[in-house]
Length: 162
Image (cartoon, rainbow, N blue to C red; front, side, top):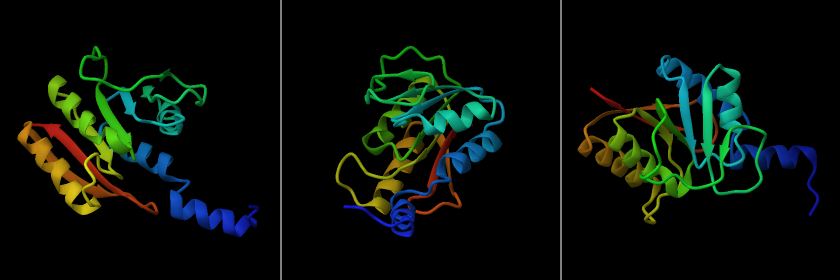
């Protein structure tokens, strides 16, 4: 089915803001100025990696998909057994990987920032956000939230150890 340019643009806005990678990268650089080694979990093709790399960060994207941009890429899912070389864990709409981001960050006492979308347990969005915050607080994180200026899911959950 062919769509007109305005129809394609409208669909892109509904499905995900085209500026979300740059806006999240700007947020991360501002909130975590000393985090230079960033792991982008469930990072898809690596667009957030590309945006953070352009801002001077050393980024590794974890995702099981075989097709991606020419960025540092681990073609696998993150597990708790992965040796840690990161300063910060991030996820932009990481689907079912939100929980592993928080668990891995807790295990290695790393800060994290995640914009959750889908839960890994069929929980609706707002209860899922609260649940992620509860998991992080129980693991010892100070949790805060912020909204990015993007269309779609935009709530950033940030965890820092105090």
